[in-house]
Image (tube, rainbow, N blue to C red):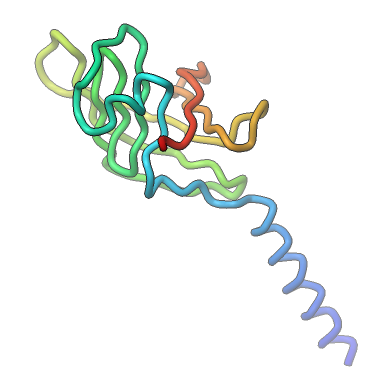
Length: 125
């Protein structure tokens, strides 16, 4: 009987841990103002733009196609990508982390491999 109580406690603790670290769902695009305006193609030119989909990260000066996405225990995503920069030939590897914003749980922060926040994005309407 004690074992059953222990097992039930372990299952409940595990379930609570998963609930607190809700997975980030990229099935719908996220972006800043100009990223969402341009989610279906370049409609408006903008110096600052950030668009995040389940397959790519697009800025005003680059486009990165995801090659690997790994969910982390804290709910964040670590994404490896191949990026093309405007005016440059070829692709270069990059790593990004996508996590919930510390300021607003409805927003996501895009962080580069050096820990710099590239920007915050909201779900596009």
